[in-house]
Length: 254
Ligand code: ATP
Image 1: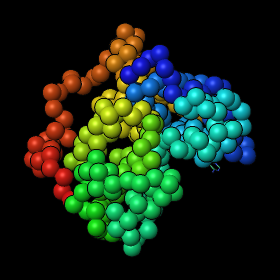
Image 2 (image 1 turned 90 degrees about the horizontal axis):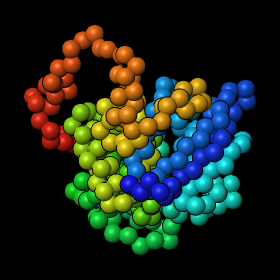
Image 3 (image 1 turned 90 degrees about the vertical axis):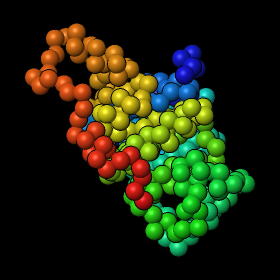
């Protein structure tokens, strides 16, 4: 991670839908090479924030720079540099994964090797399968593959592992980590705190449209403990997920 180079800068962002203040004056930076998490309860404003940075929504107020470009004036150039996995993705049912990736690449006027991209998300053996025949976990991994066709510098993942079984979730974490190790900056939202701890260098916690904390997971936990927080239950060395994975194995099921 390069703490001296921010690839995203958000200053005083506001966005309302009629009378609902979805985002209420937030500011933060994301550094190059970082995995940055946005956490918060339902309705906190996470997706709205992501969609504005992704140039899919217009802010009411604020200055948002992505890869050195202002979202208001350079949405086209920004779209060329970012990859976006939306909360739910729909693909044409009767095209194979190979055909779909070639189609998406054509939007960017790029030639790609679909097998190379499918290998990144462990789906090479499904290259000629239809999207409608993928399991939930495979669909999630394919939606990341689709977000990689333009070789993005920044990848946005909105709740990438929601609804997946523990095996599929752990495999998706590996996929995300590998992309980050290859130099892609990653911004993700999640409701799984364990996922944020595993993957994120820093997290911002949002509530009611505001950022109420921003730091590394370790520092946030340390601060809480320094303020006298104690758990009633003794923390065990293993949890139910460890039992589940021990009994059912770590292999992907489909
Ligand atoms: P979740 O965790 O449930 O995905 P979130 O943190 O991503 O929630 P947002 O989806 O950004 O939150 O929503 C923030 C607020 O804005 C919510 O009150 C939501 O109902 C409202 N909202 C979001 N999109 C729209 C829209 N298109 N029109 C009207 N209100 C909206």
